[in-house]
Length: 143
Picture 1 (cartoon, one colour):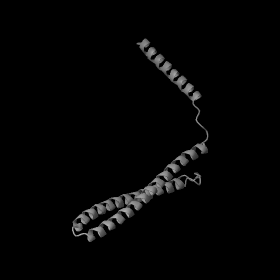
Picture 2 (picture 1 turned 90 degrees about the horizontal axis):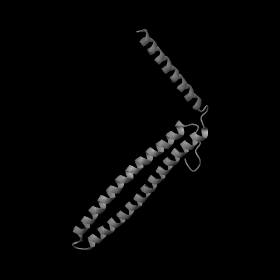
Picture 3 (picture 1 turned 135 degrees about the vertical axis):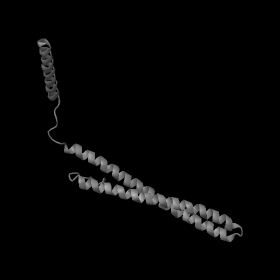
Picture 4 (picture 1 turned 90 degrees about the vertical axis):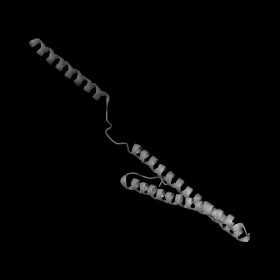
């Protein structure tokens, strides 16, 4: 009985000793940085700011392109309406054309509204970036 007790204590002692040795070795190899690197933080924030700006620019370009597309469709619709009124059987054909143009205009206007909403969200993210990270210094070409 005494031998079982002695063996259990010996094993526990050796296990604790091995754990302490491993912890000591791990702490010798690991050194936590004592200071934050402002340059690293700045580069991370710059990458986020640049991504936000690219998203805003891309969405605005798409919105402008769609606005020009609507103008073109409206011009074609007015031309189709004037041609339909000039021909006797043109009224039926003109109405079909006008319905197609109307559905295309509605689809593009919905997309423009979605883009306006997205642009607003991206601008909010930009404002949040500036206000939440007071140490962030944006370059002129970013924000």
